[in-house]
Image 1 (spheres, rainbow, N blue to C red):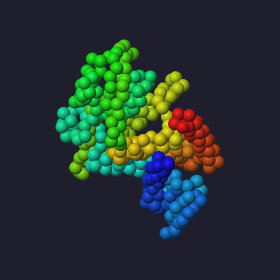
Image 2: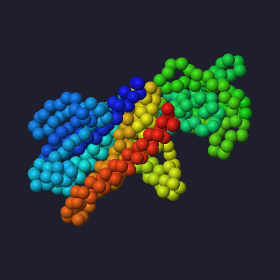
Image 3: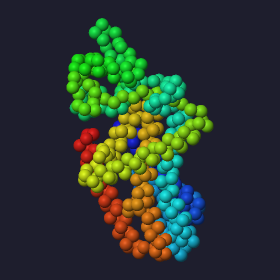
Image 4: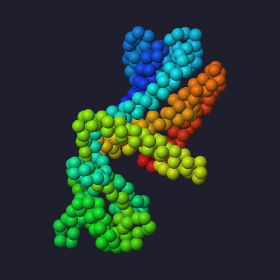
Length: 363
């Protein structure tokens, strides 16, 4: 239940931030906004200020903005969407994407100020980090680690030795050397799970001859630690991290689409609402800094997906405006409506398929 509540709050905030971008830029452009709602109808409560109704609605999934003439009508009215220049309309259409990026930068700024757990790769990072840990960042399928119950983000505290003492590694190399020296034997790994106080001990029989590219245990490890920055450093660091996250997200989607078109199969796991809800709950249980980073990741993903030139998405609407600019006249309302309806139907079908996949995986 707690996972569901956290998921609802996260998605509502992210969609609300997105819609707030459309609202603010529409107002700035002189467009009349008929309603700015939190959640979706039926309406629970609202009030009118100026020309706009500000409402709170019963279905708590984000929000919406009703801009006068957004459907292409009322072009003769000065306060309608269609009466404004292409540039003004493009700004309104893409404002939600910009707001999602800025929100991710804000979250990462807060995280960098409070302290984020990151991979430590330089001597400077290692010396300035606190709460250092050797963490599992990948568990290979069907490996001894997976069969024993080792999970991603578990920390290796040490190894229980025959005399009862614990060998405590100081680096990833110490762990790798110990595992290699005990290949083919059964060892007891002492591990700690994020968000939990107690440690766990796993007796694991290490492989003597692991597959190529894998070790006897079947995990990838990284030395991590918590690093906090002064506020003036956290600001530019948050922006930098948001830019880097956006670039990596774009590259990830590009490789995914390449794999889809070349082989007809997705090269990575794709999650829908149930999968995202599950991962949100896991991030919340692991810790506040992980949750901040995960929400920033979702926000960037919403920005990247929405800017794609696909009907029913912000990028598709932007493409229609560019076509209007080239043609020097708008598309026929019926044609544009049909294109958007088809795009929405395709998105809905994809969402249903991914949700079915999530149900079989998570439930």
